[in-house]
Length: 277
Image 1 (tube, rainbow, N blue to C red):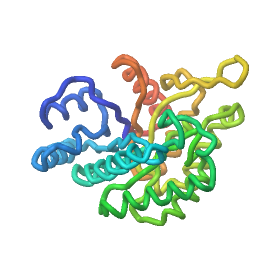
Image 2 (tube, helix red, strand yellow):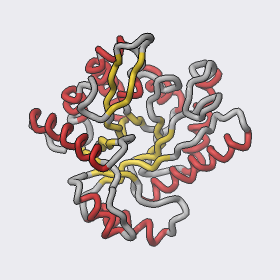
Image 3 (cartoon, rainbow, N blue to C red):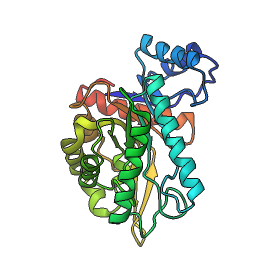
């Protein structure tokens, strides 16, 4: 597996981008360019990544193709297609989005999110995106979430089979699957189960942590890796069984210092296990 995160040093070209990634000791990172970037520049970033042995893990397509607003849904669908095309152009492993919400906010809970009707909408949207772009190397993936599909290993497996496209992959964020005390305290088994069922399809992963508070009712907070209860020993052991280029990207941290602290924690666990990041 490859630990990664966002660069903090400003970059203006592929060389300074690679330098900013190397300065953190990362072997994977996020896409450095947007869909409007010209082909020559895209290829320059792709070549620089290959030379430096850096994996461009994912291109974010964050939007809501399930929006009740028809114009917003259409714009989101086009964004997903553009971002998947960008992933293909720059050599990223995947394009990632959430499935979207039937209400507002775009990434929030809604009574219709976990219904059969929405499941069918997700199938249609995912097929449309993949069929429009026809990627050869990049995959379209859906980030796991607590209140929308895919919300478990089983629902992801069902989606994967039903979408029935070679270019449909899996994005793994275990923290987003922990939505109860039961899952919180059994998260090692959750991680093992997910990797057992979907491991060969996992294209990218997010590294976060989660903390259960002693407040009523159930209250879960996303925190910096090392400050919560996620079993990183299990996470790293399971990811180590997958493709050696599988990225583990830190995200949602508030500062460069927090990213450094998170990387130190994750690397310390890997060192204890004798694993390479």
